[in-house]
Image (tube, rainbow, N blue to C red; front, side, top):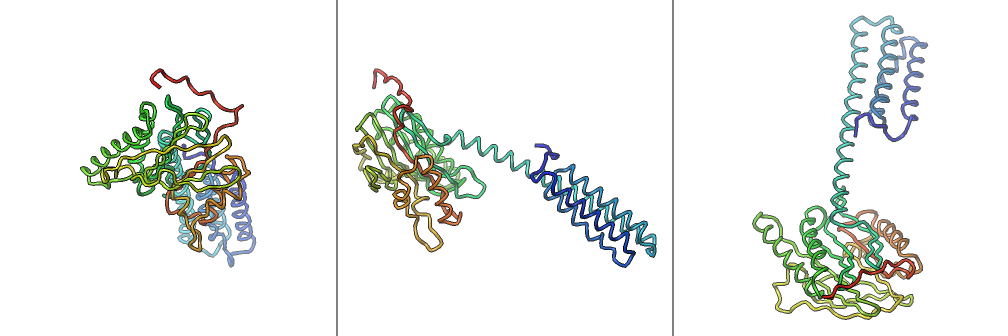
Length: 373
């Protein structure tokens, strides 16, 4: 991004600044040496440096230097030559400083833009853009990182169409923001691979556990923190045929016949990374969705978000209040309401997915099942 790129705000700011300089210089030139207020207009090129492009800042600085030079040389007859030189030199220094400040600002903006581009690219590689679509499954929602300036963090999600049915993941890495990215990426990559080849959700979770165990072993060797990950795995193999496996994740919300139900199917499994603490294997549970059911999955950054009075965000109440909204609109409304509820001060990464089967006319045909399936 070049330093001379046009800045936001158009021509209004430099035009107003130039008019102010000319008006003040004219007043100085016509009222005699008693007033001499144009020296205070040194703020004009500094304001331009903070708001305008480089060429426009240069124009404001030139007008300021020329105007002040004219006033100092021609309208203050009682000044000594040394005083005139000091006045003109001071105006020149202000103009140069404004140009340096403008270029520095533009370079920082360019660096920020490049950093944002890299972060966006990392996010697209790590997390697919919402909404997710896998076969007839749709997942609308939002993802917000708690770390200021970060586009990615410790929450993960994915939906894939596999030979074993539609499989969906939502997870929450211990910690938040940038430090949690490594563990989240490891688990997410493992899910994408294992979901295609593992016959059962237990097998998928086992592969994710192994990947995170290897990551934690490397982290221990490097002296960095080990992590665990809560996760909710969902599998849909046909109408009324679905399974769910919870790895220490929070409940989800099932919407059936206009009523919101908080569900904790399969609750009790240990988070990924802590599986070795128990001899009990993780087991998925069968659920029986009805044709018009839909669900809301989220991480605890949503349900544990606090308002100014210390209350937790009442997600179930909000879903019930806006139950007639389309999924995309519901997701946007919930995000705006969450930010309003917390005053924009989220303490943890927050992810929410509104999951439903697409209408029949919009559904994407599922791929043919392999012989092994």
